[in-house]
Amino acid sequence: MDFKRSDFPEGFLWGAATSSYQIEGHQFGGAGKTHWDSFAATPGNVVRAENGDRACDHYHRYTDDLDLLKAGGFDAYRFSTSWARVLPEGRGTPNAEGLDFYDRLTDAILERGLKPCATLYHWELPQPLADLGGWRNRDIAGWFGDFTEVIMGRIGDRMFSVAPVNEPWCVAWLSHFLGHHAPGMRDIRAAARAMHHVLLAHGTAIERMRGLGMSNLGAVCNFEWADPADETEAARDAALTYDAIYNRFFLGGMFHKTYPDRVLEGLAQHLPKGWQDDFDTIASPVDWVGINYYTRSLIGPASGPWPALEPVEGPLPKTQMGWEIFSDGLYKFLTRIAQDYTGDLPIYVTENGMASASPFEDQDRIAYLNAHVAKARQAISDGVPLKGYFIWSLLDNYEWSLGYEKRFGLVHVDFETLQRTPKASYEALKLALEE
Ligand code: FCB
Image 1 (cartoon, rainbow, N blue to C red):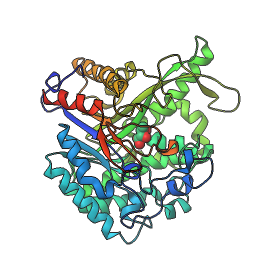
Image 2 (image 1 turned 60 degrees about the horizontal axis):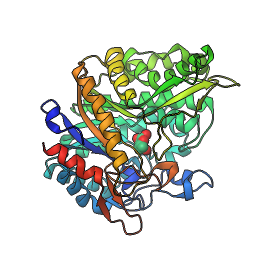
Image 3 (image 1 turned 30 degrees about the horizontal axis):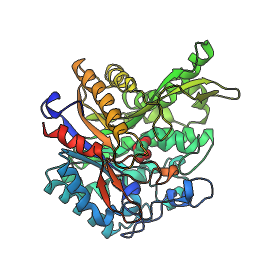
């Protein structure tokens, strides 16, 4: 790598991130069905109709995986807790095996000197709650609060940090407006409700964890830089609307107790009654903010109703996902978010990385990380209180609707034998973190 640990301030945390459904193997240990199981079982939704039944079998191999983190010189591990593993019905009686698993996992993380950084929800909604309307149903805030208390009642005493929801934009917009993720809806009213309810659930979980006496609680959102596809006024306007939906809605709710006018223009009529009264919960104070950043989009106008925009193919080199590599976007977001929303609050890059088809000699991933870490350094020297950087992902894993084909891991996983093999990027990072 062309950076090393000592280039960063004392105490800067280096970590790797994963999520439960993408690695654990959801058929093991008494987990309940999730909306991803039914989404994947529906023809056409997921490449080869793959699901998370076995994934990386982390459920049985977690000690080996944590050994890889330790040997790689990482300081922290960002993982998630599956709601359906803890509460197979989404509510009611907990699954003792599930709670035991997260308890063992927590201790194993700590035994290796790593900091446990939990995300409560990384998308595996229990199917019985999806049957009740899932994120469209306002009651989800309370259900999520109850789940928060059950899982954090067990492991909350040992967490370094906790964030309720991974990427509200994906939970709401990608899954209810674009239909690319479970539950695969394409409905503006469903999307509006999910956008508001996911924030209400976030705030409720923060309040419940404060009630448990917990601290170092945060919010993790994803951001995509939006540039106009051309010089026209119409493209500029479309990019601003895209930016408002993607990058300003969720932080706007959490930090300014309001939603951007550009989004309300399309969604106000679909938001649940009384939405304006929920901001005290939504904006319940957090201790840090996590930024997940991968790419940018070029946006142009489209015919049809609001938001009347569409992404256009861009000219930059692309990853295996077809995502443009645009490291400037990370710098732009770090500085913009600190300035417009979070001020002195610590910021973490909670996800950054790339999918590469190269199984072991992933020089492209090394170059991608070098470019993005350089932007993080630049942001720090310009005064952004960035406190850590988590790479997505430790392992090749289940990349949602793209199945097992897209490889984000620092460590290669053979999905036949489940053998783990560190890639060149893992070895390079290990050296960088030693110095
Ligand atoms: C993020 C998700 C993560 C993974 C990466 C590539 O949006 O949080 O689960 O899919 O993208």
